[in-house]
Length: 467
Image 1 (cartoon, one colour):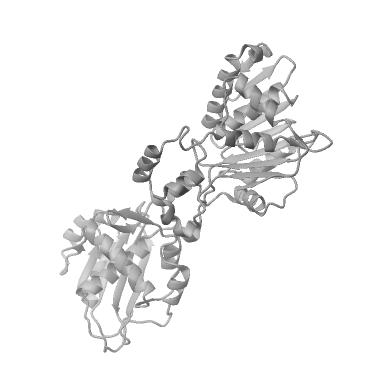
Image 2: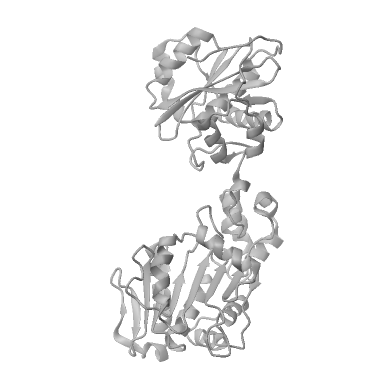
């Protein structure tokens, strides 16, 4: 993806030559970015005030920045260049790389002030004898305040809060020919500022934006199609065969989560809809505020949140019309109340099973269940059975065979739930989900338990009241 404002001349060729003199030999695609980003209008000003460069990691984005900064210091008479990154260690590494380039090039090194290379923490930068400076800063609400810059580089722009923009943009306002660079890998969920930039870049109608993106052409919602497609690997990685090998990408694919690989290596932007397991329409279609269990056997599901701050108990039974009814019957802070409450429900309603996954946080309740001496011991699932339970719950929902009461804790859990691959199945991902999934897991266990141990009869009379 490539859109650039019209220009009549470019300083890019000189920048490429300067980089080569310093031992930095740029690939053709890197040279293209420099030439187009340094395109000039008839009055000598930059055609592009903003530049966006989105490319997967390790392709050589940093080398383009180094070449641009060398040009700014030694060719373009820019008074101040600010290089920022989300994490200061990234800015520090960029500082070390360009420092090596300058120190290893005598004709450049002699133009540096005798005390111009500053390595003190927080003061990293390079100053020439004529006063031009390159500073490296971590992004914050105060970064850049008090400076007047000609060039601002926002590396790692996938993590770019609006407060950082507010702090850095005014540094350019008083300069006659400023330029602002955004560089990043593909955007994540929180990449609000970068998404706005990309929208303008893809539209191609911004008069002062040069935009470059290397990415797979596969849509996020079908990202699985691109994972092992080597043509998509090549499309997204301009340095494939130069500094990135197919063998390494194949190893990454084996080691990384699919959506993570899609973003980091294929440049596929995070799309919340692509990550959703149960679609909103399917879950909303299963809601029935008047649903209730008929005269059927019931099964309980029990789970505990990842940080053990909450517990959840769900029930599943069969309605009069034969559909399954799934309901969250208790969800509270803490875990101390769970076992007594389950014992009460077992005594009052006589469920055929109490389902629990001992590999998760609820496994910590096992000793308490033993001490409670209930008439019904919990049924424990192994990892394979947990995968079967999750798959079965998904099928029940999307096939229209399960109803729920439209309860907020479960709705939130479903909306924010993510899945974790496990052999040839998947389970709910406690760590990556946006909300507490304990209500969803308890419901999943209850539904799975009912399929295994509940009554198959479909002619029943209402109802149960959970008090």
